[in-house]
Every structure is written in C-alpha cells, then in structure tokens.
Amino acid sequence: MSFRLAAYAVCIEGGRVLLARYVSPKGESNWTLPGGRVEHAEDPFDAVIREVAEETGCDAVVERLLGVDSRVIPAAERAVPGGPEHQNVGVYYQVRITGGQLRPEPNGEIAAAVWTPIPDVACLRRSSLVDIGLALAQTLPATGHVAAVPVGGLIQH
Image 1 (cartoon, helix red, strand yellow):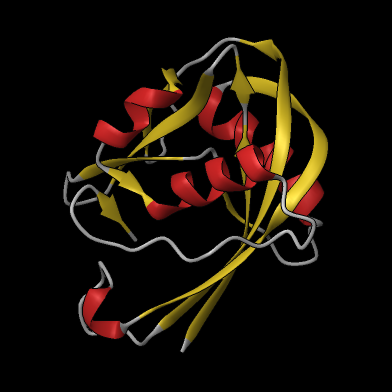
Image 2 (cartoon, one colour; image 1 turned 135 degrees about the horizontal axis):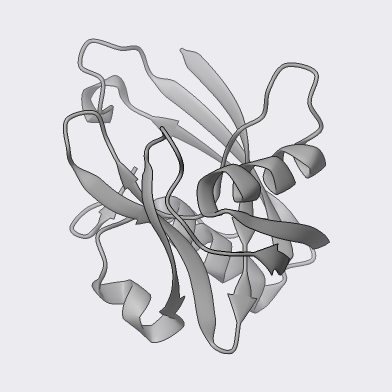
C-alpha cells in the first residue's frame, strides 16, 4: 500500500469557498481544495500555507485545525493503473487569505483557483476532499472527524 500525508486549506469567505481546478497529465480535471503532500520533515501547518501560495498565488494564515481524514483508495479505483491500494491522510485547516492575487499554478497541475459559492459546489465534478473540508468547516466536530464521503457521480477520489 502506498501512503501520503497531505494538508488542505478550507478558505470560506462571504458564502464562497476557494477551490482549485486540478488537471491530470491525461487532461481530465476536477475541483479540489488548495493543498497537497507534506514534504519530508515538513510540518503540515507550514505545508498548507506553502501549498496555498504555490497553487493559488495567495498568502494565507491558519486560523484553526478543522480535523483529520484518512481514506484508503482501492487499487482498482486509482487513477494510476496497476498501482497498489493507497492511503491518504489529510490534515484540514481553516485558513484566511491575507494577500496575493488568484492565478493558476506556474508549471503545475492547478489550472485555476476560484471563489465558488458554496451551493454551486454540489454541481461540480470534484474531489471528495472538498466535501470533507466543507463538512468539517460547517460542523466543527469536537473529534475533528466526519463520516466518509461516498465516491461516485460528480465526486471523485
């Protein structure tokens, strides 16, 4: 089984959430939260700020830890054929944008970063990470955990 530790930013402002449009090397796209892999020896707190800057062009500050999500993606459902099962552990932070200007990720996989009205999210092809992040931000569970989001239809791994 492969493993990844990642940090994700949940930026909500004026009834909108900041989303990033991920485009795979094959040209398929979906919407996700700004964030990504925590580098070796990097603190997830620092990683989320770095990822927001890299993927959106914006400066951010962490306001609070929202929670942690762990999911196992079966080998048959992975985007990379022939790969093993994959576990992704995501640390979700509520962040506030403090400066910068939205732009695509230079030489990266994020083609756009946009503020999206929260009710419009349900109509988007998106990563389940978006739904987990919004659920954490809206419910603020004391345990920092929400139920798994079913994958299918518009919701992808």
